[in-house]
Amino acid sequence: MITEPNIHDADGFYAEWLAAHEGLTEQQSADLNARLVLLLANQCGDQAVLLQCIAAAREAGSAVPLD
Image (cartoon, rainbow, N blue to C red; front, side, top):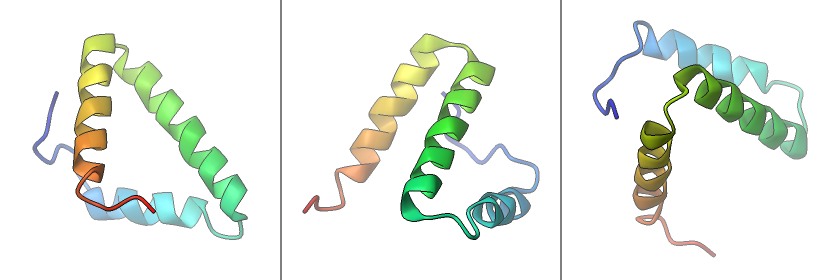
């Protein structure tokens, strides 16, 4: 699993990702994110890496209290 920044234009990517959400409802935005995750997971194609990413994302999120 790559944890160091690995996107050539990370700020540009983030701006485009945010722009893709403009005008969407909260549900449409969540659906867009879900589709994006599945497309990116398919691009990766390595289940072991994907499972590491799930664990890392969950661990990082555990620092934020869940209401």
